[in-house]
Amino acid sequence: MISEKYEDGFACIDPRVGEDILALVTPGVELEAAERELLTAHVEACAHCALLLDLERRLATETATRLPRPVSARPTNASGWHAATRWGAAMALAAGLACALILPPQPVGPTVATRGEPTAEWIRPVEGEVFTAGDLEIGWSPVPGADAYRIALSDEAGTTTWITETETTELTIPQSVGIERDTPYRLVLATIPADLLPPGRVSVGFRVGGLLDVALHRLRYPQPLGVMLMVLGAGLLTLATLVNAGRRRSSRAV
Amino acid sequence: MVVRCNLQSYRVDLNCPTIDDCLGSPGSNLQQTTAGGTVIERIPFHDAMLRYINGNDRVAESICERLADPIRIAVRRILTDTDRDLEDILQDSLVAFLAYLRKAGSPPDNPEAFAATIARNRCYNLVLWRRRRQAADVDDLADRLPSATVSPLDLIEERERQDLLADTLARLDERCRRLLRAIYTEGTTIESLRDTLGLKSVQAVYYRRDACLKQATKFLNRTLFSCRLIERPNTETGDGE
Image (cartoon, rainbow over all chains, first blue to last red; front, side, top):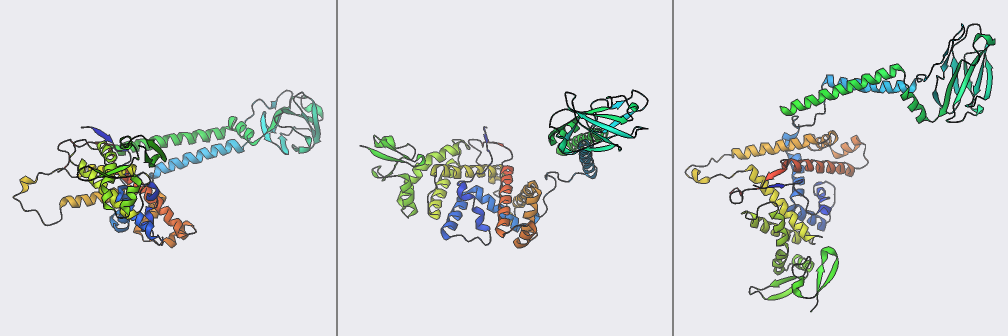
């Protein structure tokens, strides 16, 4: 006994003609006599196209095929538990990613100055944060006893490029300041009166980049909540995949 | 003597030094012989097909001679050299080719490949039937009266055919399955489907239906030959008779 490979079974004898063979059974398609003859002759000689038309005829006439047998059907409906797990995993992953991308990132270094009695902390930006270009909103924690705050912006060389005073703990650095992309800057917070904070110590570094830079930075230094949700989602997804694979194996065995 | 050979499949002409050099080469001219073997006419293959289409039955012989070898080669790749059905497949394929010429009114672009594919499909079909219907020795049943009712084999076969169809439908993607079910079993009108699917014309619905039917045929074709390695029938006894 010798074996022979059958490839994909019947082949069309002339695919250029066979392509249009269903025109023979399509209502409303006006075929010229010669074209109809050609298609009819083709289907009489071509087993592949005869199979196609036979399938069409059987679909139209056999009522027993109304409901495909579920046994060999590709599993499309997962069980409730499985579906819930997958949904949960997807939601957790999405929430984790959203947390990472929307919430401010973790600081890449310390942002708290503890020398002296009072303590001040930068709220935005956090150390090493990447912003998109535009007006930059910054904020810090209030310092007891301070009448006002002096904010100084310095470049990489330490040269102060912009300075302002405010009585609130929030501020917007206008675009007109001319912050350049991909250049490290440092914000230094001082109080009025000045002796409430150690001079020059309450500072934070940041830079301005593109959207991709911002996303990458936030994904690299996500908040713990985002990390937790992503880990939860990935775990659920893995579990659901393993359970699903096990079910498929067992159903194949049956 | 110089004879011009019509190498249609390569779309070039060759200058052959002798008639014999042309015979047997792809697209070579054909000779038609009398019973005594005398060459009475030499015509290009394409012309022979055109003549046959126009009602000249005498060129059928030469067309068959030309196609016999490609068909035999195709058939031998599936059946064995000594298979009893080999010659039947050859004859059936040639008859189908000639019938096609007359009906279609124009020759195919590549007649050899066309005829070989007809033959291959017939071989596949034969192998499928051999798989389904094993040989039965009727000698032992000679004294029994056959039942006049429907054969159980036919009933089983019909059931299997329906199952096969159902399996094929089950493998389609949900969109196709829903569309075919709507058209063929729920009787939804094409106009209604056009509106449901948000399409502009009914032809677009038919286009989708055609794509789904072709996809289903692909599955069906594969399912029929799902045992990708089908054993060749035994040389002497595998013809199922």
